[in-house]
Image (cartoon, rainbow, N blue to C red):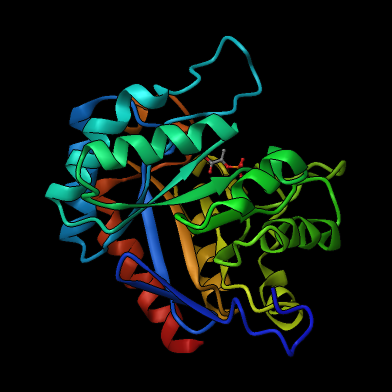
Length: 281
Ligand code: PEP
């Protein structure tokens, strides 16, 4: 992935009509976890109306608590893909936690007539799941969003990206999503967006930020979502190429991570802030 600078494999790639590189910026706003068809459709509509062509939709949810909602899995894929196609959404970031999920996504997309595209997301809990990385790296249908491991070194997370590339898939975006520390933090995780230029210096991967999972609850700041907005602006000014953002039509009803989701009506305001920060980049 360009750690040897004579290798330009990952300098730039296009997927389903969307260009990804270290120069541009895409916002993937959507549901942390798919819950109801109505919420999926409302979210897709709001995303499209805001002028975006990408979203996030969690069908397979890795949860800390085994009794918590684990995601609808493959059952929801047909209606998620159908809604995406209807609203002109070109790319959906979707986490996979098992190699069988790739086949399920591939089959559901084919059955639906490929109305949209999928970017496979590898979550922070699986950054060093080497067998999953190898499996995902061996397929070249889908690009990959690799989250930084929350408790390992940056070097170790970048090596995880090399697992994908060494197996054949260099269409990889690296995502900063905050680190766990033993020091306590007002936020869910210690925000690590100052590492954007570092990753861009060391590799050719486009860099994504996830303000939702970094900052966590909107209650962290007395003025609601301001900590999340400030973190995002810092990330954009530092050169982020992608923003992964949780939104929800009714965050109080969300089955996963509702407290960190922006309401749909806040999305245009968020995007205006991103636009201003991007001007300062
Ligand atoms: C997510 O983006 O849905 C998620 C679970 O993120 P992370 O792997 O960063 O915790």
